[in-house]
Structure formats: structure tokens, C-alpha cells
Image (cartoon, rainbow, N blue to C red; front, side):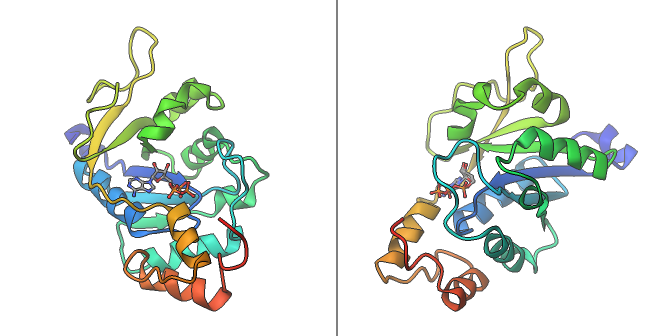
Length: 212
Ligand code: ATP
């Protein structure tokens, strides 16, 4: 922990983007692990309108995905949700989100939370250098995996290389793709998504029509 930061009163905010199509227990558990490991004040979930890295558009609407994340995190003061990417044009560039957040919350220290898969392609993201200027990069590695090719504890390399700090998170083998498939097959997702998410899926009949 950075004591100078605390003294200055700056909020340590994790930024966790994704499709959340639907949000599942893996998302919540890893967000919690990063929050604890880096002593963050909060993690902000930012559902993407459309990820520039995914070939397909999300299955559920932005409105439904936002509601699922909102309802699932409502009871936990460590988690916040922003619909800013859903209000912007697609594709959802992370650099624009961080710029908007920096303006919205001056003085906050931003930590961009990335999966190891996202980190592997990070150099090809839109304006990666600007992203590292706006936020510290955090790469999640699943417990038991060999460390990814990053230097833990380092942020921006003086040599110009991109660096991230690595945080080990719980290994939960669940993905939104897997959950959509289960729903399409008529199987339950109880215990794999928070109950408020399951209620929205059932009420709105999400993921049952289109093959995942
Ligand atoms: P999909 O299967 O539709 O690609 P996803 O759950 O893998 O969905 P997103 O909803 O975009 O992906 O999730 C955002 C990020 O959360 C991902 O980039 C991934 O790094 C991370 N993530 C998702 N599921 C897990 C999990 N079970 N454990 C650790 N990290 C996860």
C-alpha cells in the first residue's frame, strides 16, 4: 500500500471492463481478489457496448447487461458500476473510458484490471501508451498458472516496454460463453451466477433463443 496516497486521500479505483454477458461468480470473485491484493477502495465494473477485440456483438442488450451487473453488486459497497461505455458509440475503447474517469474523478488513482488473455494482446489495443499514462496495469493470473510474462510490481518500464503488475486470483472455471450455452440447452445456471442475475435472465428470457 502506498501511504503517501492514503495521506493525500486519493481513492484507489480498480477499473474492470468486460461484456458481462452475463456477469458470473468468476467476475465477482476475481474483482474481489484484486481489490484485496492491491488494497483498492473500490472496483468499478464497466460493461462494454461492444469490445473491439471480440468478433461478435454481445448477445444481451446493454441495458440488460448493465442491470445484471447493477443488481448483482448493489449490496456490496466495494463494487460500483458505470454505464459510460454503453452511452458512447461503439467500439468501446478503454482509453476513452479512462479519460472520462480521470475527468469525472480527479485525484483518483486508476488501476486497469486485465485478464491474462487481454494482456497478451494489449500492445495492439487502441493507444496503449496513453492507457498506461492514465492507469496502472494489473494482470490477473489464475492460481496455479505459471506467472505470465510480466514483471510483478513494475508499472511502466523505463526502457519503454509495457509492464504490468501481476495479481494471483482464484481459479474458477466459468465463462459467459459456457453459461450462455447451458441456458440455450435448457440447463440451470443457479449457483454459477448471483441470484439477481438469474432472475433477470429468467424474467427477460435471455440467451435461450440464439445459439451461443
Ligand atoms: P465470454 O465467454 O463471453 O468471452 P468472459 O466471461 O470470458 O465472457 P468478459 O465478460 O468479457 O469475458 O469478462 C471480462 C474479463 O473477465 C475477461 O477478459 C477475463 O479476463 C475475466 N474473466 C472472466 N471470467 C473469468 C474467470 N472465471 N476467472 C478469471 N477471470 C475471468
